[in-house]
Length: 273
Image 1 (spheres, one colour):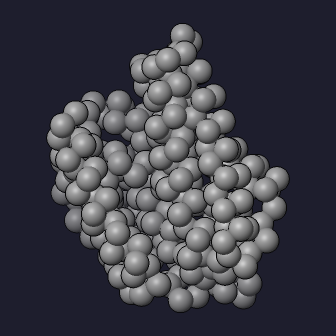
Image 2: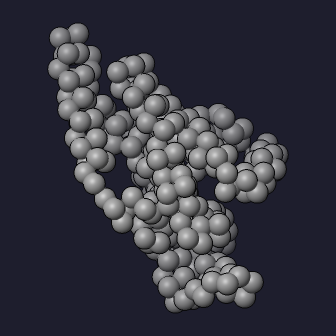
């Protein structure tokens, strides 16, 4: 517990300048690094890290993707083209080619692992880019905090609610300690946080935010945060590991610490759009 607290304090100190300079290139750089580390952890978990034909393109994509939405916000959504879709199709063809040319090597390439590695990696990369996208949207200087409010408020209050009132296991095969009561408590507090945060923005800024909409966004974000957490837990249990990494002592890796945040970022980006 002491190590977890020390790490949390250090992370909070590091986060301060990132928040201050979130309107500069520092922000996409941070999320590009987190995305690349997250992909590295995932590929290590799934045993596909050493396959450079799989890993290197994903690392490059993770490092570049956050910059594609930096200083553009949702502009690319209003003027869409087929480039993202075509890029995914080309990448799918590339994966098939890797499978074909590796097939004779004692059939050592497991296509299921390749596909799962690619899909989850694209999810991680897209989520990190979504944080930057939310920050670049109108009002994003405030809205991107909602991602962390949703994830951490849900997580913290689900823990305490479960500890105080938890009697019914949520999905014990995936996460033995999570309870239905904890999930409900975390969701309710997240909704309250969103409404309260919206009220503060209405009072101290020029924005006029619907608190009903904020309540709905809080409900949706809380549910998605818990699904994101459980999804990353499923992968860990499937491949028999405790943590994805050790970059944050006492907390594990990027995917251990940011699992809920990744899911919320994608949904909130869509919701703001």
